[in-house]
Image 1: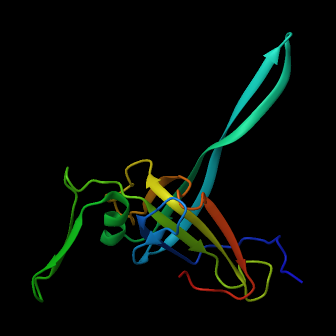
Image 2 (image 1 turned 60 degrees about the vertical axis):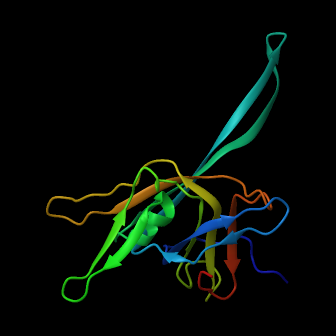
Image 3 (image 1 turned 120 degrees about the vertical axis):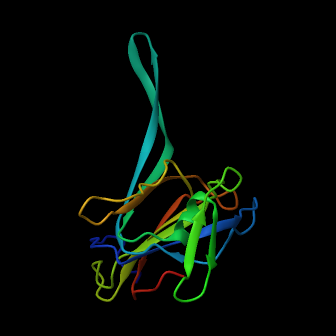
Length: 188
């Protein structure tokens, strides 16, 4: 008997992104290495539906709806230069030796490519109705829809956030997946 398709959703424990490296029509997409979204706090998924209405004889005759956008908003507690490079473009370079090491993320006119990426978030074990199980949200192909919220906050922690729009993969048409696991599984 299959597991239940109905569940509660409690919390988010982990999220990772991966650069989309290929998306060939009719084949399998490939992704780069997973990058942790540090201190994940929220992963909010929303969408837009476009409705077309056919009118005639002074009445509504029919209507048709289609998904016009799926969007995700992410907040996380810590800044990651690798995440910035994966979602905005740019380059991260490390230099120096102790005690003068540094990591620098540079975004230039040539490297601001807004590359596509995958995002996967997961509940903690027992964050679903199945004891020991979890749920993964996977958005297969995202592109930033606004510049990330970065900077500082006076006498407080600065929370980092970004929003991105989903597109269906050319390879298989997937926009979003919800995966309920009977046994909790790490993002892979």
